[in-house]
Image (cartoon, rainbow, N blue to C red; front, side):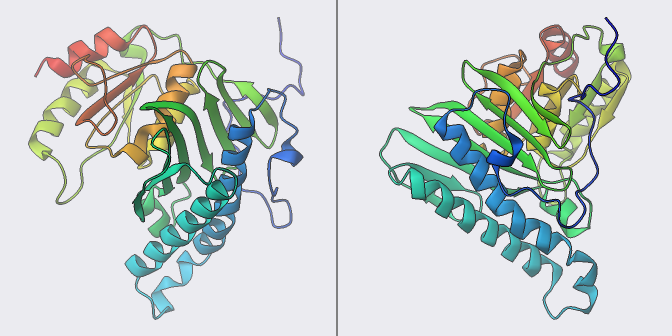
Length: 298
């Protein structure tokens, strides 16, 4: 059946909002999918933190004439955003623990823990590249049960709850269900990855894995924000993702997005992935075994 001309399409990215069009929180979005109180709290926290990140991102072009160094500037942006997230989340869930990239871990009730990256894609942010995100995952008794990934510049909101599916909100598409792609042939697959930078990772090993993937797939992309890579797999924009050395806050929300969108998560050898493990592979159902074979051939 043909799509109506005005019907929104979930996988189309959008340009930044013009001044005065920024939404303050979930009520204005009028979600078409049922959201729990927990998801609502997470989304409101992400929107609150995004305000300072968008403001700071607008100052990047002035860094060359600022007394503050670029590294110091971004560090302060990270810290401000994490403080906002911590305050917003603890206001309604004061007993929950908190693990953040910048502020470390705070013990909670022993059952619940927020796992937060206030600025995933710091290097992009520093260089004025508008591809970064806020990532919030909720862990309950060792299992991720809710996740939110918000890209402030494109205003794309990805969210999921265990057993309830994964969804995306954009300025023109509200609460559209996410589904991983249906591609089964690696030769037609677009694969995301993270390339180790100076001082991090085994560069020689990574190059052999990358060469194998390049040889067998339609293309490889490295955009520098792991949470958005997972979200894009969930949305069917990427068909697979492999990466090494990701921290819990890089993956917590993204893992659930992929699983709730019908995808599979493992390490690159096909074994069950543990939060913070040395490698991770996210795929649709049909590409899991082919990707494991490709990555294990070296």
